[in-house]
Image (cartoon, rainbow, N blue to C red; front, side, top):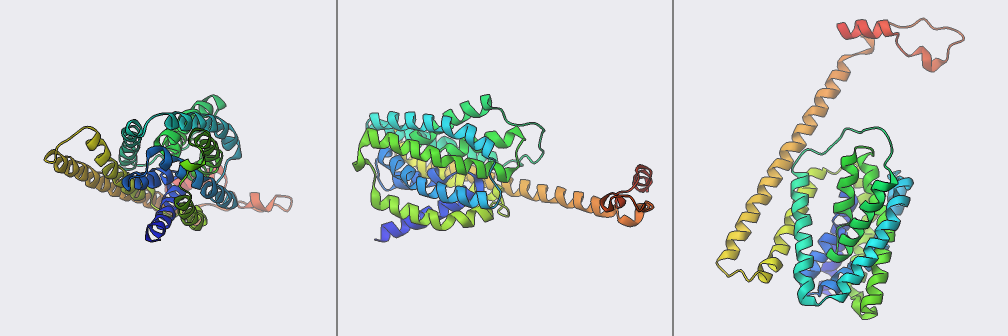
Amino acid sequence: MRKLLVLALVGLAAQLVDGALGMAYGLTSSTLLLLVGVAPAAASASVHLAEIGTTLAAGVSHWRFGNVDWRVVSRIALPGAVGAFAGATFLSSISTESAAPWMAGILFTLGAYLLVRFSRPLRTNRRGGRLRGRFLGPLGLVAGFVDATGGGGWGPVATPALLVSGRMEPRKVIGSVDTSEFVVAGAASLGFLIGLGSEGFLLPMVAALLIGGLIAAPIAAWLVRIVPAQLLGATIGGVIVLTNARTLMRAADLDGTARPAVYALLAVAWVAALALAVRALLRTRRQRDVAATALAAVSPATVSPVPVSSTADPAEDRLPTPAAVSSGGDR
């Protein structure tokens, strides 16, 4: 009972992170299950089955808050489902001994990516145009395969790619990725059901993760507007790297004297990434403050009013003339 309660809390925390970053529910949950000795295929299968419920709740919550671009969802979800089904079939067909280092390696790599990604300033400028299907389709296929074979990865692969494109608001990227993950989780679960049978799902753990995730989903959809993604992403990335490093060192047969040195090196890298994340966050906030101050300096008093015409639109009456704007800027 105590273990199930801990898993419920992990599911809650993982969903808060996932809803705020658009990633890391599967990474966090799968990492914990591997840590307590669950077989890789069973861990990924259980997490994806729980994600059917959590992603549905997250999708509805993001939709209610206006965070979903349904065009992107429709073009990324189906290829993602195909990739997830293929990944689940692949993971189900290999032995536990072979799957453990494979899965830990994927999780470690994605955790390291989070450290690097969130230790730098996040892109805020947007470019015009819409994302094309020939970009979204392959992205969904790769992200779905990585997600199923690694126990997580849909968000860490899909979310940064959409953010870097510069053609979507960050909150809509996160909401769209979370919403499309419902289809991906369902396809992965079907693949694991065919490959492992119903005994491949650890139902008590699934229930615990699901309950925690359902509680957190609406909160996360609200937090996406206010949470500092820089700190959250770097923190979770460090946790994932450190926990999966143990499995990789065991697979590489590193002796007892080398392991503390590796852990110390990873810890130093984690602290450095957190420091860089704080620096980037403060720099971004200073830039926003400077921009806000510059806009406030152009007060309405410096803009010459336009004579009101009885036939003019009231909204147009409040717009300054080009000459007035020019003179105001010169001052």
